[in-house]
Amino acid sequence: MTGADDFWAMGGYAGFVWPAYAITLAALVLLLVTALRAQRQAERALAVLEGARVRRRVPASSDKPAGDLA
Image (tube, rainbow, N blue to C red; front, side):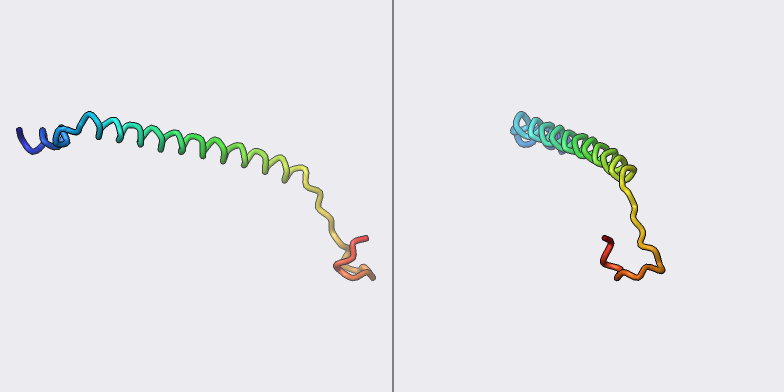
């Protein structure tokens, strides 16, 4: 066997090594997809919340202290 053949055969353990690599790659892709979906969902929820936010301003010439909004 050549060096490349030995590498692909993984010393006789290729039946265990290559499926382990495939499972690991599939898990990483699944984690990436779920993270991107969750990020998109969170960004949409944030946009909705920011759109519904009411901003209050205290008049500059108010006689009340700045911390007292009542």
